[in-house]
Image 1 (cartoon, rainbow over the protein chains, first blue to last red):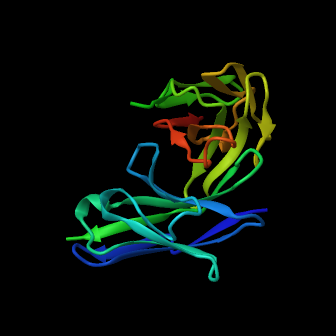
Image 2: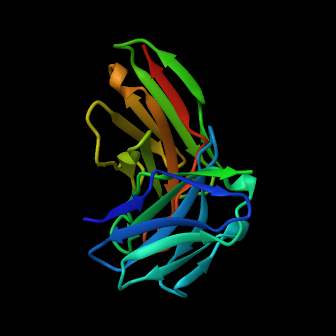
Length: 114
Length: 115
């Protein structure tokens, strides 16, 4: 069975500071990995995804994530936080076969302090 | 623009009522999903469907049923709503495994309160 662990349910950063949101996964088969963002009272939208091509994946709004197989990690980073980045972020994993059932982490709420 | 539309953004129901949550997608996706979102628990899969009239239980199917009579529409049914079903419900869709990567497209969510 696959699973996702997000370290830190709440993260606060100052505007302009580095954003680092941590995600570790477990999967019995080569995974697809995703980061989604959710703004208040909205559904989730895709930030970026890893599908076994480049290990460093660039997404929307200046975010990127690096797939590290040896560490089973897929941490999300952004060099400089903006106020508009305040939202909840979810890491997710799907297996590469079957119905591609997607398993989500419990989410990390990012607060950006002016 | 791709779209997943959930019929109601906010609902208030009474204990014991039957509740229907409707979801329609216009992307010709094979797979459709219902998730429940609660603070601190993330998203938990209730049911999913990979074809018309097909359904599979997710991680928390108890107290719910689903219907998929047409490819674009996936309904979640609470036969007898209870207060512990107060939650945000999210519908999503994706391409079938042979084409897609599992990337999900989400609706805006339906916030259900059961009194």
